[in-house]
Every structure is written in C-alpha cells, then in structure tokens.
Amino acid sequence: MKRTYDEINAKIKSGDAVVMTAEEAIALAESKGIEKATEEVDVVTTGTFGAMCSSGAFVNFGHSEPPIRMSNVTLNGVPVCAGLAAVDAYIGATDERPDSEHGYGGAHVIESLVNGEAVHLKATAPGTDCYPRKEIDTYISLKTLNQAYLYNPRNMYQNYAVATNSSEKTLFTYMGKLLPQYGNMTYSSAGQLSPLLKDPTLRTIGIGTRIFLGGGIGYVAWEGTQYKTNVPIRNGVPSASARTLAVIGDLKGMSSEFLRGMSIHGYGVSLGVGIGVPIPILDENLMKTAVTADKDIYAPVLDYSEQSRDRRPIGEVSYAELKSGSVEILGKSIKTSSLSSYNKARVIADKLKNMIANGEFLLTQPVEKLPEERKQKPLNICTKDEVAK
Image 1 (cartoon, helix red, strand yellow):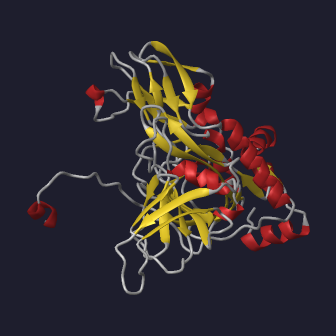
Image 2 (image 1 turned 135 degrees about the horizontal axis):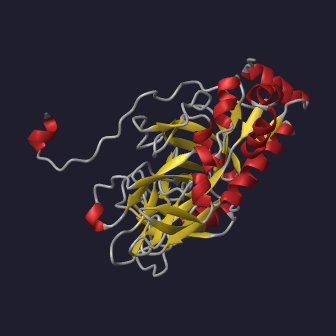
C-alpha cells in the first residue's frame, strides 16, 4: 500500500486521518501485523525532550533614538553575540553570566523571554557618524522585540551513547553525575519515541519539514552540525549517534513547558528543548521503522573516564534494558537513569497527534533531502602549512 503527502493532508483537512503516537503504532503492529497497521494508520507522531546544548535564538531589538550599533551586549548579565548588525544578536544557550554561582545563562534568558518576563539589556558601542550612541541600558521583552526566533544548529541526535565511569573518582559531565567504578550509567534518548529513530534514513524528514518545536511550530532548516551516517546499523536503525537536525521556529509561539533553561552541575548551562516530528506512513517500509520498539534499539556504552579518552564502546545495550533501571555489563549490574524525559516525549507525541487529528497541523514534503552519506571530521592540531595540504 502506498500513500502521498497530498492524500494524507486531504484526510487531515477532512478530519478523516488516522494518527497514532509511535507507542500506539507499536502496539497496533504487534497485535495486527505490519501490513494491517500500514493500511490503518496515516501518520505516526514522535517526541523527545532533553538538553540540547547547540541551541539559541536570534533577536532584533529595534533602533533607539539616537541609534546605536551594538558591539558588546549582555542580557540579564549574560554576554551574547552581537557581531551581526546594529541591533541584532544571537543568544547562545550555553553562554553563561560570569558572576553566576549556580549556572545562569542564555538558555535561562530564552526561557524568561518565552515567559513574557522583562530582560535587562545593556550594550556599548564605539560610536559612528550614523550610529552615534555609545551605550544603552534598558529592558526588553518578547513583546517589544521585532523578531525573535529559535535557531538550533544541532538538535535531536539520532541515538546517543550511554555514559559510565571506570575511574576511582566521581565525574560531572554533560551526561550528568557519573559515579566511580561503574557506579551508574546515564543515557539521553526517548528510544522508541525518538523522532530520527522512527525514520532512520530520513525519507520523510528534510529541509522544510514542519515540526513541533518548543511548544509551537518549527521547521527543519538544514542538516545539523556533527551529522554523520557512517555508523553501525542494528535492526535497521543506527546503534550509535548519527544524524542531527538544524531547526528553526518563532519564539513568540513557544512555551516554557517545552523550552527550559537547565543547569547541569559541574558542566554548565543547557537548553531543554521539546520536539515532535510527524512520520507520514507512505508505505509499509516506513511503518516497519516507525514501530521499532525499545527492545530492538541499541546504544553503545562509553567510558567517560580519563583513561578511556578514545571513547571506544565497552558494550551495547537496548533501550528496553536501559529503561528497566539496571543493565548487566562487564559482569556487573549497573543502575541506569535518563537525562531526557520520556514522560515529556510522550506528552509531545500526543500533543502533535491531536494537532494533526484536529486539522491544526499539515504535513510538508521536504524541499531538499539531507545527505545520504556524511562523515564527521575531528579537529586536528596542526600547523598552517599542514592544514593547507
């Protein structure tokens, strides 16, 4: 059986589309089989919510009188990038306020804007004939900004490694607190609800794909940074971190329920981002991957200790094992915990399902496919002559 985007959108508009979350589709396929599930379901929805450090927001403050060409800008004391134009800036999620003891940064500024709070803007400038003002000290909010849009260069990792620690000391990492001597394992993926694991070769996800982003509507803008395809495949899906997406959306339509500033002890600031992607069931092959369950999705286990900086996998575990609370590896039973919220991912998948079922969200066909092959290059330490080669 085959469908087209136009056929699915027509059913959405008429209220006849059958939409299921990935969890619901898995249960249907288990009870009725792939063929029947394909016949019955038009769209499968996905969701994920977790720390996505490579995130931020572009804002335009508007011109003051007299005007200023801002060169050094802080928002609530957080330095932000102003090297764009006179009154444009980019708030990086991981930028931190220098005097912050508990980790306050760009992610928290973004959350404050979404909440409608006043944000303290300070800026200085050298002063020019056309932009004579040299400093400004004022307050802005989401309502006062001309434009404010989230632009995240790397979100939604397609799978991710599981972290543990073989050393004698506790480590504080972006994967959370890792206890010594394999005292625990942490992971960060929604597994069977995770968007890019449901369409692993990105047949339906590309530039222009409409998504649920931060509580509002967003789009896939480009391939994400560190996008790669040369990874092991198991049961039809990557069993290591692979593809990523760059995404964009209007901050003015978002909610702090799905966009939260985070402070990770011993690491720094990050932005909790909620994303949902609809998977149109164009044929049976898409249904097969859309109903891949936790028991069939595997992730590599990496040792984050100093003696294992090459980060070679010491094992591989399924998400069903990870979500059970403990994993048997290296002859030990190790407790597991998730840094991403599966409950929130479920809420997002369900919310997106209802938006589509109610005709509030139509599907978009990608205007351009993302790369089928891409390798990730390391940063090598070399001389000018060496890099020129």
